Image 1 (cartoon, rainbow, N blue to C red):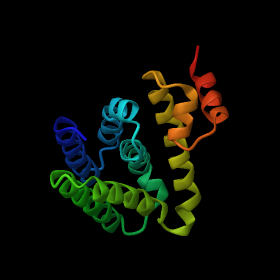
Image 2: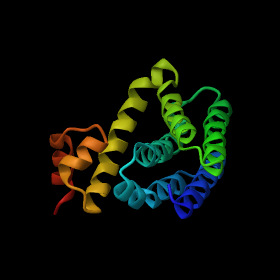
Image 3: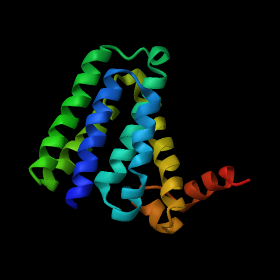
Image 4: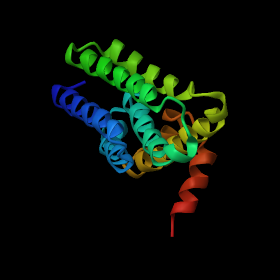
Length: 165
């Protein structure tokens, strides 16, 4: 990862930590959108996973009261600790550790209490589809985009069909 992109990603992660602490769903969604260009040009699993995580977190924060996530503060601390470790790995130029911490953050989201598992799974799926559409808009082919996000072309085509006027 280029130094300029490392700095940008560190800033995004720091901002995400703050947005999560302040329960700023809009801010988390904006951060996800900021990383779309990187994800479409780099086509790496870390960038793609990060945009999905940020978007999913924005939806979780948006609905946190109705979701009744037990021990919200502990959930936020766990996510932010993974973000801290990811930042440290980036600063140390350790791409392998960075990838590990980003993937562990996603796994942490998926490990919320059983009564939320299906909802979180649905949010992550919708996040993948939504962000795939935006990556596709940046010029990647539908096949490449679907493959990068672990979707079928049909899922992406269905979504793009809903979005076109």
